[in-house]
Length: 180
Image 1 (tube, rainbow, N blue to C red):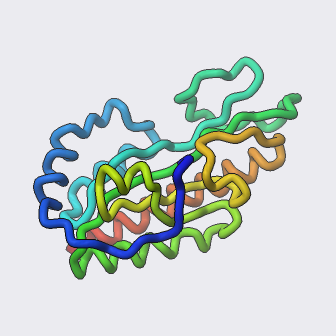
Image 2: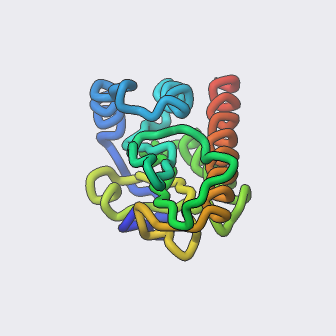
Image 3: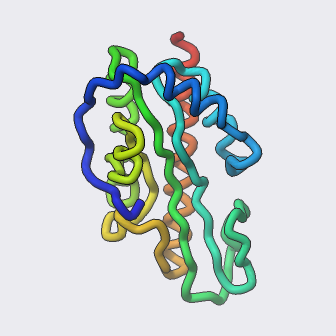
């Protein structure tokens, strides 16, 4: 997120329900990276949030230039420069009791690895949709970038953190669905 910023406080959003329904009506699961479809589908049923955009997190290197590739990094490659396209989810959260609780829970996800997982806002999203928040997997030194180049060792670490990030988010959504 080139405009990633710290967390913002909720503001009034009287059109939340209308915006949520419009977002759900335009949601095309065919455009979602396959590994995170269940998370996006689950979030779509939670009445106090809706997704704006997401990306699983992709690695491009050598001959692997497919931007939507979801394959794991090979066990060993002889490439010193790997392009990482950040894993993230941007969502709008309702200013309600359930929304506040959900936002608090989302804020705990960076504990996975605080140097590689950030929770905050992105100006670009907030300007279009108030109460929008972003969780992302990116080295803290590059938190405002959409893509960076890293070495193989750091790419492996990013992959591990990315996997833990999506797993944690999946567990959170499953928990939220269970207590509805």
